[in-house]
Image (tube, rainbow, N blue to C red; front, side):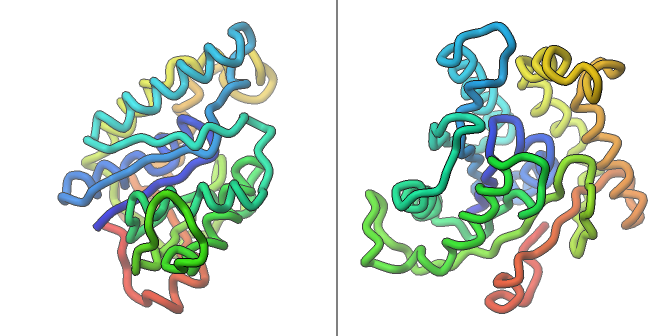
Length: 240
């Protein structure tokens, strides 16, 4: 299959589903990672253009660790809004990847870029084959299945699916570690909430993976909810 993980920002997919993507890749599936924005506000000191360049480079390096291809739609971080062109760009992305499965944000999260990315991904699967919606990539006959990964710290998220990432936890850590710029950003920008006591704010995601593993009887796991439309169109599991 072709697997597409779409996050709002560089580092999102590694934090939430890096282990699952590594498992898909290990099983021989083609994996793509993508972000709606370029992360250009993710530094307290660097100019927007510079931090965007750094963050896209970090995301590409993280993807390369599992043989994945990284794509950035290059919208501005925290100033990402829906329009006809935005929707067409997402449709074109899915057509380019010929995605069978899309992993994306849960619709109810703390960040508006996360929420909008989720909304667009939820809206467009049935549009992928529609020829009247013209994009650089031609329509394909696949309607992808969408799975939501959990929001930060799993708040309000009750999983319906789990993926055992016990064997992939170290590669998940390595993928997250590529995002060096975000460790400092969290310390600079969110001193009172996250990143102050831990050496890396990514540690919270590994703790969460341990918690989800306890829930399903393995050492480490990542958790998902299938989008409603996924159950209607593909009532069988496409997660590894």
